[in-house]
Length: 350
Image (tube, rainbow, N blue to C red; front, side, top):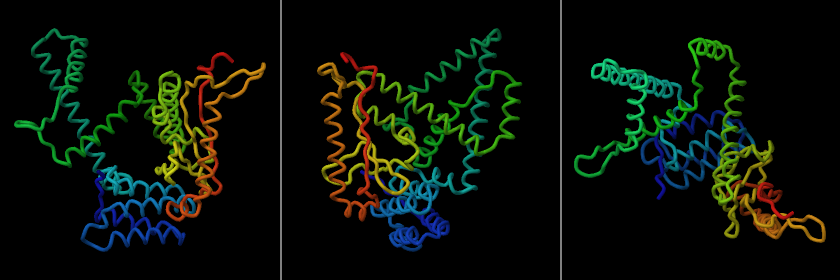
């Protein structure tokens, strides 16, 4: 069951975002959000209609304003839908909140370092002849024991408040980031890295980070594709939010996958002109993907079925173009499709 959220902070953020656009079509949809939220006090429209209205703003902004404003309202919708905590949302658009979060992270890092020193002091007291290898074994044991710790829900169990659970999520995200940071091999390497980062162009750094994210995404996709037993959902998970793989013509992957009762799309992509592109995804390991008839190579039955399926999706969405455009703001009249099926590694007998 969905846990819808809303409140004064979201209401303020929506009102502030309205000032960022001069496009009347976008403002009309933002006004619809504010109407649902009402004035000060109350529940601020906490409901599914609020989530839908925020997503409508995001779609309209992609068409007429730009990706930054669309992404802002996508995040608003994620918070209202219950997928994003308020502290995480504020970190994007509230400098003071971000500074407070960074200060908490710094204190947590300092606390961890202090506890590590205390653990080493205790080791040295108990074993004056302890070596660096002994210290590594100590911390390996601590790290392994963490997997066996639990919060418990019975008598004597530790109970955490919602705010503390939120903190755990934040620390988990921070740990993932820290785990992937490069470790300099020496103090000199650290100094050189600091010098580089002090002069680096922010745009270039953003490009490097994007390239790094794409490398990680491609590595995960390659593992899934080269596994002969990977099902379609594993490939879909590896392609999540990786619309760049299909070319630079797409601005985002749409959250909604079903636009008519007959169609559930694998990967719906939005082009810059607001029209839809459908990616129909099949397994990498396909029997008889390519066959040989009378000395000539041709596609097997599985590929033809996938193409026919994509054609039927386009036909159904074209027939329902008016209702889809009115309800979801997506133009399906000029929709196109790509079928992704098979891998040369698994092709045999051709």
